[in-house]
Image (cartoon, rainbow, N blue to C red):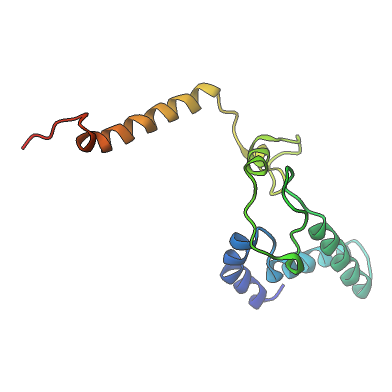
Length: 144
């Protein structure tokens, strides 16, 4: 892993990922380097490990999808302006596959929240909005 790739993925790459919804080229290279290092540690030769890591990461990114009606692909070569659908976001935070907390199982990181918490948060939000807008719509009187 190079310092340049780390710097670029932590700066420009953040914007890239936000706009495209895919992986930036610098993060992809870091993933490839990490995967190749693991293959080498397992006993593969350097050239074979590099090729295998590149192929595995590229195949995985090209077929990645968040689910729902989102398009397939997160590879930098497939980059385009993309915003995930509401269903994909909902699935990401509510579909725990049982593998624990990880980047591919964000729902596994979420604590189980009782349904009444959502209702209480919504009611509190409505009260805050009414309090802020109250003087302007006649709900509260201003005292000078």
